[in-house]
Amino acid sequence: MSDSLRESEDRVMLKALESSYCPEPIKEARERQDEILTERFRGHPYAIADIGCGTGYHGSIFAPACRLYHGFEVSTDIAEIARQRWHQEELDNTELFLGDAAQAEPPANFYNLVFCLYFTPGNFREPSADLSVYTDAYLDRNPSFIAIFSKFYRSLKPGGLMFLTIYKDVSEAEAAQIDFYEHTDQHVVTPRGARFVATAENFWSARWTQQSLLSNLKACGIAESDVIFGDLNHIAWLVEIRK
Ligand SMILES: C[S@@+](CC[C@H](N)C(=O)[O-])C[C@H]1O[C@@H](n2cnc3c(N)ncnc32)[C@H](O)[C@@H]1O
Image 1 (cartoon, rainbow, N blue to C red):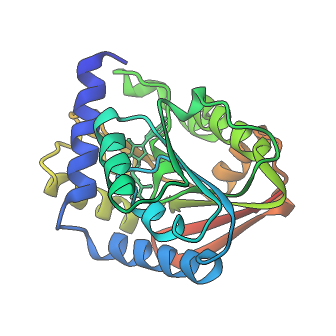
Image 2 (image 1 turned 90 degrees about the vertical axis):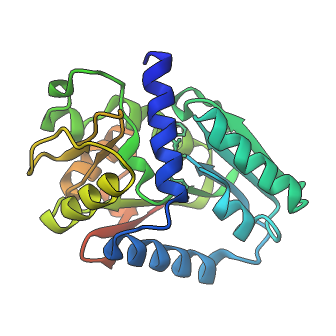
């Protein structure tokens, strides 16, 4: 990806993360995601990886009691915000790995928990200005997604858990995505009904069917029997994967 496209994507991503506006169904899904994870996992001495950790919000919740918290973040500016936040909160057990998570080298059998939250799994793709490359076949077997989740599944300890928050491929989710991006000064360029929403500012966010997620996970060596789709609301799943 050219530097200017990367910068544009990072800029609008940060704007969305810091926006005071959030469509109600997205806000509700995020709050439910956080309630579930906090109730189950806060206060335990786990080793946690957070893929696409953003500005460090979940590190602030879990790092105070966990053994270590590793954030993986591709945007230099967003990573710096997370780093400073954790530094100010004196969370010395945190570490920020800057770069594309597809290039990360997490150790095998290491983490108790791997998070990829707030619709981040739908942002992974090999960048292209030509949106026609993102066919249904691509979305069902996305090389960037597969590179990332193969590595991080290997990095889970046996018995460890991975959590992914994803949009369901329903029109209400698409409407909420478009509403969100337009309220953060972006210009949607995809036609209604496409499986992903892309903007002129280089933002890209896919929606999922259970079949499309399972086919990507299968390519990562993850069996359907180890995957649970938990409903957050009518537009989102919190997917739990057991190793
Ligand atoms: C929707 S935001 C979610 C941020 C955070 N997890 C949260 O819940 O607030 C997605 C984040 O993933 C990062 N990201 C996107 N693609 C990435 C990649 N290939 N490797 C690492 N980080 C990535 C983005 O820069 C952004 O900060």
